[in-house]
Length: 589
Image (cartoon, rainbow, N blue to C red; front, side, top):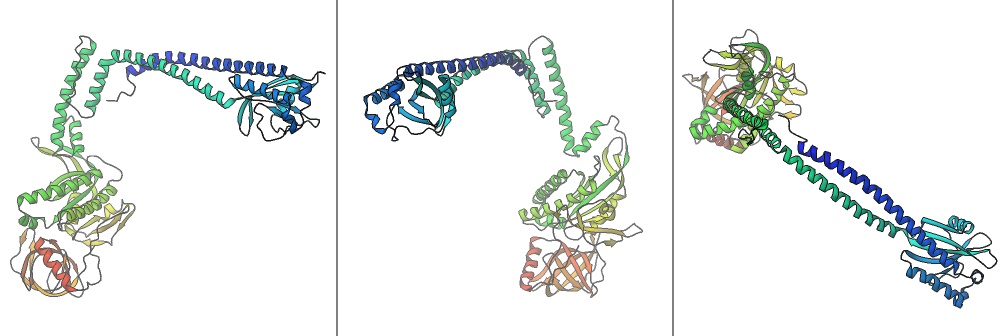
């Protein structure tokens, strides 16, 4: 169900609030502009009136006689200073008053100013506002609302006064701080804006309240629908009206009851079957037997020596460890889009391409395999174990669908790719992922080990496979184990299937590693399974199981151990510590 992003009450609130608020905003903007214009006109008229009155009281002939610094001491000079100071003192907006005149060269000079404190002599030159002063000398009065100098922006009025012969004697200059006017204007504007915002907020609030009352029941229904969409099947709508909304609420509650029952079935079923499989099965109207041909990539994994380890840990600890292992592996598989088709004890059958197929199924399967091997390393570190895992991967066409009988069926796959993946996994040694040539042909950004061939039972031709070194920058754990020279002996039995054959053979042990042994003089084949009892000075160590990993031309046999109980690990670690320097590292994959 889509989420309600713009509820009805918000629409109503914004509609009516916006209309009323817009009207207030238009009126407020007009009021602000009109107020600004009125204030500007008032200030201009006030300053022009003050300047005109001041100019009328100045004797132009006496003013012309002020030329020297000593003129400051004359009573007429001081009288003019007092006139200017009175203007600054009594006019609210005026911050400075003075007089100036232009010489014969057209340069303007200060003559008298209201403080009479400036250190310069009478006649100090003026370098700014010459254009405005020249204009005032011609027109009589000039108002400059934004005259700027190095100290700021000033509202200035220039008023000409004449001598007795009617010729211009000089200018009265009155200045008001335009920056202060701006601050005053901003304060007034803020007051009007706050009033506007308060009125708009009140209008929107009233409109929202009206909208919430109108849309209350619909909002409750929308919230309940959203909760159900998020998986909360306890959500119910409580509308007690006897109209269409009441009928809708009752129908909605019945629908949620049905969804809750279906989700319980899906959730319970999903604990035993992959959720993608559950979805496909529930989507089928006809649960009949049969399937369709699909190309899938099959990943088979198996833990080494898990059965032997269970005898040491006991059933409860063993099951707990197995569950932690499977939880980790399942999480990795899910993150790569795989489908855990089977859990065979400590083994997994994982499908990429059924029931959901993607173009990069082989790529994701191989990356998943490397991630599983790395996750096993983390589990070993956390649990203090030395578990090893083999993984076999093949890509091919299988039949995927409902398999079984009308009374009991499951979603599964059958085909040669399943069998070959199992054969490849059985060929692995240590912690290793081997892939078939069919899978390798679909990969990108991958580094594989050299080709290996083996002849699985029931197949006329040899199978070529490769060990995965890294894919997409994700490196597989190194499958190497340095050997240390020793001089020991061992009793060896061959293992066929799950049975240990009768009769043992003695063999010298020429080297040991933490997970490997080097034996000699044994009639074995590559990938034979062996049970080994190692003779040590302190007594025999039994319970060693391994796989023949390599047959060397000099008759030596490399055996990779699969079951490593704590007792075996301690014995091998002791031998390694006492052996000295290892031989050069060799790669077993």
